[in-house]
Amino acid sequence: MKRMYLALLASACWLSLGFPQAAANEAVFVTEPVVLHPDQSATPPAPAPMRTASADRPNMGGGFIEFLFGGGQGQGYQPQGQVYQQQPAYQPQSPMMPQQGMGQPLLSEPARPAFDPKYEKQLVDYDGKERAGTIVIDTPNKFLYLVQGSGKAMRYGIGVGRPGFAWSGIKTISAKKEWPDWTPPAEMIARRPDLPRHMEGGPQNPLGARAMYLGSTLYRIHGSNEPWTIGTNVSSGCIRMRNEDVIDLYGRVNVGTKVVVI
Image (cartoon, rainbow, N blue to C red; front, top):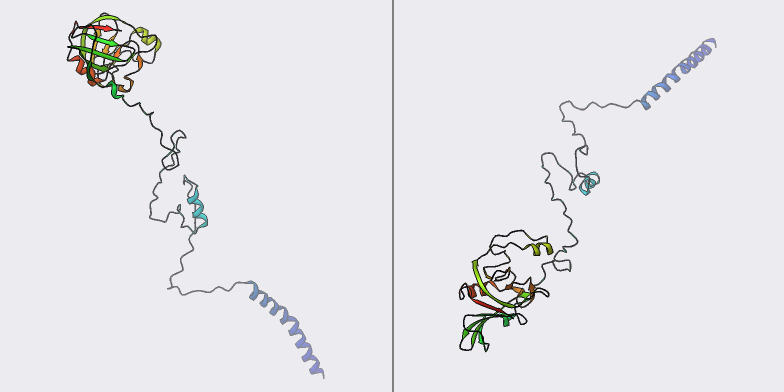
């Protein structure tokens, strides 16, 4: 009986000592991770790619958003070894220059009036009293006549002085020049300060291809680089012609030719 009591007491002591240890072992088993040691010869898996945004990226536009949320395959994504091709910058269009295809025509220079055929050079009847070789300028009707004799005259269309600049009288051709230079008189500069003070002869010169000077005045019969003004009151008193017409007239008259302006 005594032996049985001692045996039971020993078992109780073992259980009281062993159960906490087992509980502690169980806690260790649950809380500590199990570390598996793979074969050292196996190739370790590649780490997941880390997406980063370069600090010097100048454009944080749509491509960068695609890079963040599109798996790195957006327009702004730069795989290693590839070079980014700079896209052309956006150039805003001026509201004064509508683009073709937007329902609006492109702006252009204003259309010039067509040259009226009645101002073409032509041989016409003439019943005036001036003798052959005389130039007669009909200011109101914008015609210049070179009298031929026998009741005929060569007629040219001309541009004449604006209101306030028209004049009449009798002059003679005092000089002739091909592709003349142009120096605007002081009176004209006062009216138009933007005019050049001097312009060499040439296609852009307002005196055109030829000039015939009238007496000692500043008036001339000259060509023009604005043929659409023939038949109008446009000048400051000079008589302007198309270049092809003034070249023709220039070859038909001489210094000393009488010019009648009416």
